[in-house]
Image (cartoon, rainbow, N blue to C red; front, side):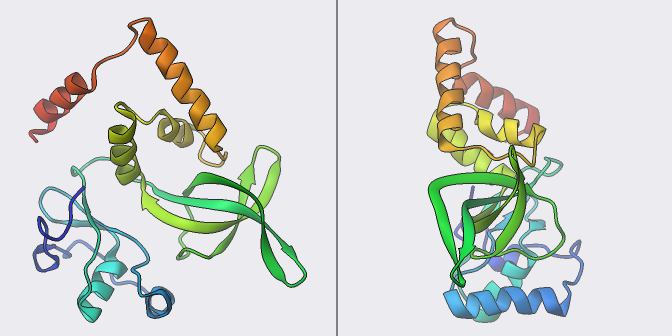
Length: 203
């Protein structure tokens, strides 16, 4: 993960990006004007080539604002992840059904911003969620790997089943299983994994 001190906006390469539709640009710009926040992080590879967040890049340049710039290795798969909470429509308003947060892989082409209401698939059928944040899978992977001192198993699980929600309890259960596995010496140290990644990708 990086910020503009390591990758200034001016050095980001955008020659491989396609022009966004006026409707999509308007949708995201309206969100920025209302919240004064960019809708998505900007993702670049080791060559400073833009991989995701083109409209956030355009808005950052237009309004001269600081952007959250994340780095990844070119060729790595990347998925857009939405995190949200289940809601229901009652008395003319959307209301929370609980406090648990869930994550889904977002595969639609339509733009998505925090506050949007989406119809998603769950273990019990379909339900509505209110989007709280949008991230790229590679960003979540690195952040949670550091936080958990290992690989984020829940992200692997979501990629195998992209339309199934995972509650915080399910994540904790998977972490507990990993601790049991570690107690049996069935693990690799984080230092060894990082060393292999650095050797493989030259980082």
